[in-house]
Image 1 (spheres, helix red, strand yellow):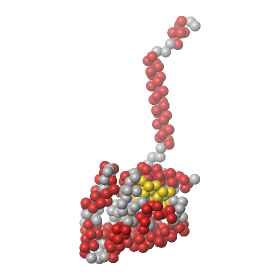
Image 2 (cartoon, rainbow, N blue to C red):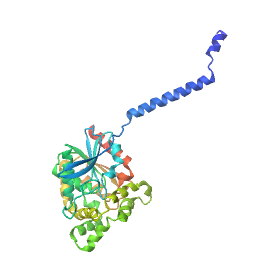
Image 3 (spheres, rainbow, N blue to C red):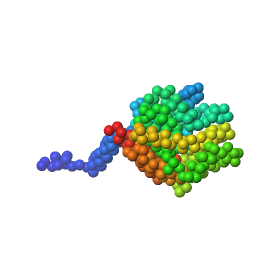
Image 4 (tube, rainbow, N blue to C red):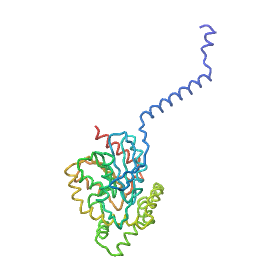
Length: 331
């Protein structure tokens, strides 16, 4: 080969380095493009009010472009705020609605001296909200207080449900230790001042922080955001605010009496059911999760290493289970 040609074919080290850099940049850009294309990005959460039976009901909404609706029903002593991390994990795929019950969070709170608060009342207003929003079918995520609200909705409209997602929401006596059952019975039947004061103490700042949010995370308290109890306590500042929750705790025993009706619904309609249960919850114990299998034997059950407020501890893990479950239903 002619020397001049050989010389022209020689590749300088600087050129090799430049080529490698170009190749790496190109590959990373391609990889990023693939990941971006595969990713399901969250929809912006909006914060709205609806007029339901003359009352202002607050709700969080995201993913309105999607056909499947998931309604997130919160527990005690919280509000839709408890789903602030879960909503964006779902809103890229589903239409998500998370209401504040009448008397909770940002929703209107009629005076408990003139408005008796019951779970039937809460269910009526959630149903009214969904009617106002023209939501005809939905999947329900029920946690704690969300179970009695949700099951009342299902009994009233048994054919509107696409799927049931249960997270530490009781429908069986097996899920309540005997002392917890006795507490709810006494709260409902004992009208003495001593009993009233006892229930009222459950709504105190220390009770909300230490007997609710931090109770199940003693070994790992940093997983629980102080935003959770700070938000709740903001809406428990007045005596009337606290009495609203007291009335619901007093009404809770009626849920236990209604458990057979809820179980009959499950047996009859066999809704697709996903059970995600924090097994470290001493109040709503894991036996309550397993009990669902008696009536919906095809339910999918996952016991998590978390407590009562699992959605605060493990929102990503819960979202993955929900997405996987919903994908199976779509197949």
